View: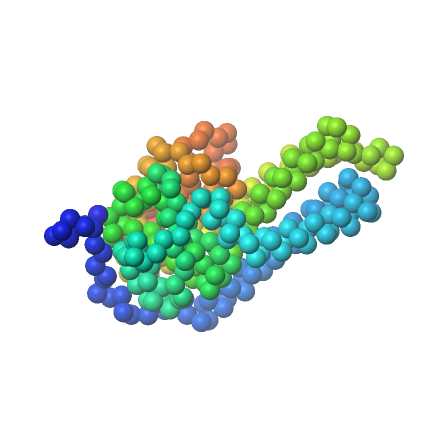
Length: 315
């Protein structure tokens, strides 16, 4: 990163930072908000329906009612507290402007240009270079960067990354990712209970309970949740790349950053719940060997993202 004469790294705001960015105009934001709100409600309704079905399998009519009650609680938590869950999962800690003035300067410049409120800023202790945004709306948003990303990127590249994360907020899509992650965590926990129920007699044969069906559901439910989460993530990342490049009028800083981040993610492991992997700008689990890699990919291929940024598709 650039340094001043006293050896301290400084950030110089870009001369065009005073202009308000039209990418997040009222009309565009409203259309995206309606679209993404609809997707969120589909996710939440799907989770509620799944819990009712599970309750029915475990305990008939009474089980279905219990499943509905649990579903309402989980859905409410997923909506209101999904950002808290993501922050805790990443072990992120808040930082003040006195502690990291350059971090605040970049984010303030970008949010002012985009006409958005200032999010809360966090840093995680991970040495893998990465970043993510979370929160249910721009007024309750948070951005987090890892210690690793602060170590390897210069200010221009970090600005490109933060423009990408601010774009997630402006595109109103962070709620979808946050809720999807919370749902995936919930379904994983429920699936664990189902497996024990199937193995140790939770299914009731006299009421038509089928342990094999329970076990199959326990296996397939997390798979379905994961695939849904991954499909949502791919489209969100391309759009955030595009609008982030427009926000800073340049796709090259983010392209350079993505190349560095991808290499870092493959070399340095991150201790993160797989359910929250899709929140990060590059897949934090990239270094892990997984069967059917394309099926389990939580992000678009980095080379495709870089090609789009350098090819000018963001203009």
